[in-house]
Length: 282
Image (cartoon, rainbow, N blue to C red; front, side):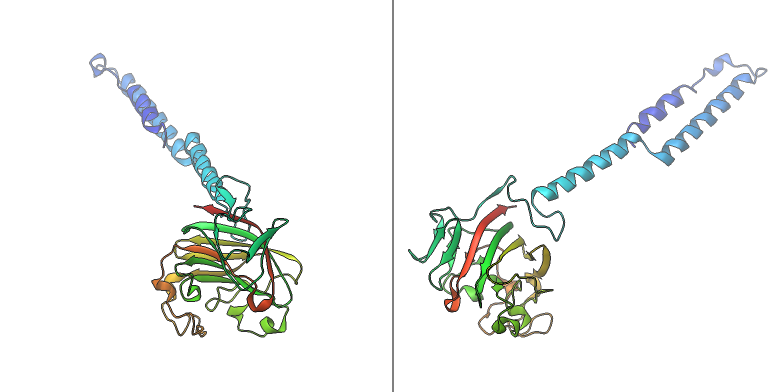
């Protein structure tokens, strides 16, 4: 405990009596030493039981700092979306899309809402590893889109990335599809724990936490899917026994935890809308 050794040493020094001053016929000095030692033992026991206040304060400070660190990177509270106005957060794409990779004219911001005119993916202009991506999206009736992370091949991205599914679960096509095709799923691999997507025309919030090979998806305030990429080594069967779509032909366990971020466009002619796309590299 902090300060305990020096405190104890001081008390012991107080008992170091010069026995050259004590005679065999005068036992009062021995009695006095015994009393002092008893007092020291009682005080030591008290400090061991109740602890040094400075130690309690230090522990509280450490706990507070650790909690603060979690809040800063947006991970405090598994079911919470982060405050994206804090340090480290920035827009994924510039308003003029100068830091995005896509065919000219296929994607654009309109009143801060990003949307596509075709079934084309818009990509970040560089790789990301260990990050949090926070965004809002709005479906149309029958929307089928996705947020793509860790992409290493833009031509065959379905097999060489991890896709977090965006879909209109209210539409019959997706309501009757396999669970790992529905909104919030890690597409083709992990079922969402619940369908919490809002009806077409309403804004949803999604946060994707990518920490190495571990991915967690929060949708509208609820953790809906998690993945440890190392556990997905089979291209036929998922760990839960469900089938892997044939076009996801590369095991997630072999992929690197680093790559491009992408948004899937107007898939099958149905629009998707994004806004407030913010990223924080950890």
